[in-house]
Structures are given as structure tokens and as C-alpha cells.
Length: 372
Image 1 (cartoon, rainbow, N blue to C red):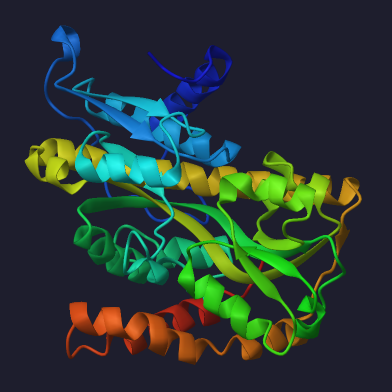
Image 2 (image 1 turned 45 degrees about the vertical axis):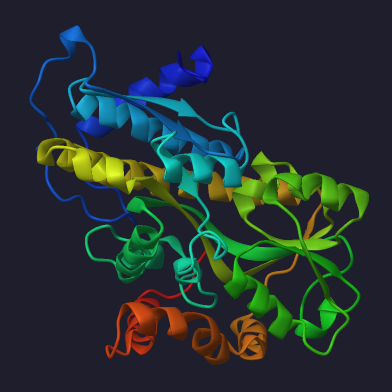
């Protein structure tokens, strides 16, 4: 019934046993409580049998998401069974999103592009969060500023946000030339996605150059780089290795100008029909899964850096002064005003929510200096 192979399932089940007895993990959101049990007896079979879909091939994230499904089963004493379908088995990003929205698939993990989640730009506004400690505060399911506003954004389109699965800070990869100043974007063809905040940021940072932006699905990125359809992209250390992007680039600059976090969600109509004890089970499983994901992706990052270096990719490590030039070119206040304020003002009228979110993110960043 599982779509994952046995050799991957065994270590995952072992990790479940470890996590059930764990408390907190460094650089991860704090766990709410320790009572994870739900009444009932699964001897006659589960009360609920669900599917969880994820469209991408990111190894660490797939492992963490599958772990989440096992935790739900364990903490519910078998009352909920969740079959995990990663690596695009159930279809593309858009297809799985539509299926969860319609209730044909119960759960999934998605990038909240604004064409499907109108408030989704708030999930990853550029030049804010840039390391795991900052993210652990901003995306904390127990009151994090980004988690709170994204809960409203997902509610608007019929989903319940459960937790966020980070991959880390985005740098710039390319096959043209080392990136040291915004002027170095000249002549590039650059892959972008439906993340409108990122697109606007790239437009501003490349202003005055001949930078061309090309919208290409993440799943097609390797081929696009390999065939020269694009010369560059934003990318993350683990993806450079796990998805073998290092094979089709020559240069990488850890600009750390944006944070990659996808959102784990459940169909909200289904969520609202669940008894309170099972909702609590899923909340606790969400916190545990997020802790594990933070731990796993941090463990994967340093070996990924070494692997990229060993592959011969030229890495340019920026100074804070050099990075500041890109941030200034990005003109983030204008992007917040154009993209975020209309949606925020409609959903939080009279609350000056844009400034409140920016102030809280600035506080988090100031208290936790940038790192890998």
C-alpha cells in the first residue's frame, strides 16, 4: 500500500520511535505538549484512510513528510491511516493542489504561489528570514508571525495550514559568471516561478541590466539549465546536490536573499469534521514533524556545501557589504506596498498589518544574525 520502498521505510519507522520519546530539537519551534494519545482501538481498522501528495523529488523533505504521516498514525493509535505519495506520484504541483482543494486527496505540501493562494507572497517575502533559527520563530505553529498570516491565506482557499517544511536560504546559481554585484546579472536568462515576491525582487535587483526572467516549473529546472533555456536560478544547498543541479551550473553565490518553506496543509472541510482529540493529535504530530524536518535539513546542508565544492562549482562568499547592495537594489518597501498591503488591508482592515509583520520580522532578524 505504501509507495515508498522498504529500505526507506525501515529507517523512517525507527525514527518515529525516537521522536515519540523526544522533547525539543535545537533551532526548531518549541513543542506544545507531551500528551499525544488519542482514544480508540484500531483493531477493526482505521476510522479514516487518507492520502498525502507531494509533487517534488527533494529527498529530505520527502522523508520528513512521510515521517509526518507515520506520526499521525502512531499518535492516533491507528484511527487515522495516511498513505504517502511523494515525488510527483499523484501528479504535478497544480494537480495535487486541486485534488486536495476538492477533497479527492486529503493532505499535501505546496508552494503557495499567488495564482493559487492569493496571500501566498507573505510566506517568503525576500530579505527577511535567512537562517533556521530565524525561521523557527517566524514560522512557529504556536504564534509565529508568518504562520499566523499564512493560516488566513490558506483558509481563504479552503485549506487548514498545519506546519511549514523549510529547505533553507536561497542563493543564486548560474553557468555564466560569478555573481558579485547586481551588474553581474547582465546577459542572463534566469528561471523564476510563480512566487511573485521573488519575481519582483529579481526584476529590481537586475534593473539596468539585460536580465531576462523565464517562468519554468521547478521539476523542469535541471533540463532547462542543461539545455541552456536558462543560465541561472535561485537555488538551495540541498537541492544543488539532491536534485543534482551542481552538474549543470558553474557558479553559486549564497546570497541568502529569500527563504524556502513549503506549507503542509489539509482540506479544511475535512479538518472541521474531525473530533477535537484527532485535531489535537495532528497538531502535535505537526510540531514533531517540523522539528524533525528542521533537524534533517540542517544536517544535510553542510555535507551539501562540501559536495558542491568537490564537484568543482565556484562558490563566491559575499561580505555583508556586498550583500547589502543587492538588498538596496531590491527595493523591498515598494514590493511590500504593491504586493502585500492590498491583500493585508482587505483581510485585516484598519490594523496596519503590513507594518506590524515587517516590524516583527525585523525584530527576529536583529535578534538572530544571519548564518547558513
